Image (cartoon, rainbow, N blue to C red; front, side, top):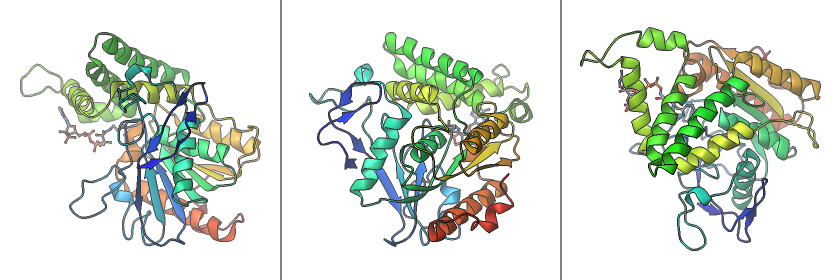
Length: 354
Ligand code: COA
């Protein structure tokens, strides 16, 4: 855990935090190896993969390890818990200056604040240049924000299931989740709200075809409960037990507010590579392509690929051969770009991008 704000941390929306800790996990030794920063999604954490055999598995375990796209022998991998989260970094469940948990007094934060906190953490670890920043969903927003906020520090951005900002449908689904958590907090049972929000969210992470094939109208052995209902309840219960309600609010609010401005004050210099997930209705492939077009119009070297999948949004978290191949090409391109700092070196991956 790195303290990044000895003298306070001002926030984009106003206000400030007196102190900010950022939880960092790292893999790989070679001090001169290229650097990859992995950004987690809404309810993720810094534990991307095991550090040793008996360690708990991480959420991108299948991408990290010898012979895998993120090979600690080739790259140094860093992952942080986002500011506002509840897995080691400062967030609503942390203590304020008086030692009392922030709770709902925790201020509004933005994706920009999250990125600035993790950039400060990398500074303290002596990491200046990041060859690849990668993440899905909210993690993809963080990756895009890195390119926009730190044009001179980032080589390649990889975003999976992410676009420049949530669509009206996605904002609506986000609103329902926020209202559920707020209502539950007002009734002093925030965890219940997290469970409801997760059930709605899980539906946005899966396609109708996937749910139909998996559950259809089948029921549990009790002969009454629909299997899809039991599945959602299970996912809701699981998150309830590990996620702080106010963290859910602050992170989901930040996700809703985020909008990448392709032609911002400082031009984006990183190459941007987005993976559109088939059947994703949270970040539909059309939105991903539109974001690439916006970036291209602003002079950014931006390209997209499609991942064929029935799952929908969650496909970026589920092991699949095509996902591993895309990721391998992404890392190869970032390493080639880091070596030459010029265009056209990522030949192995070229066939995969549009
Ligand atoms: N009734 C009750 N539980 C059921 C069930 C049913 N009919 N069918 C499956 N389950 C349970 C399984 O027992 C298993 O439980 P466990 O996780 O406690 O072991 C769980 O559902 C499996 O979930 P499933 O969705 O089938 O796994 P997956 O391999 O398809 O996906 C994850 C794995 C990690 C992607 C997914 O579980 C998940 O957590 N998704 C949300 C992650 C997220 O935050 N995504 C987007 C961020 S913006």
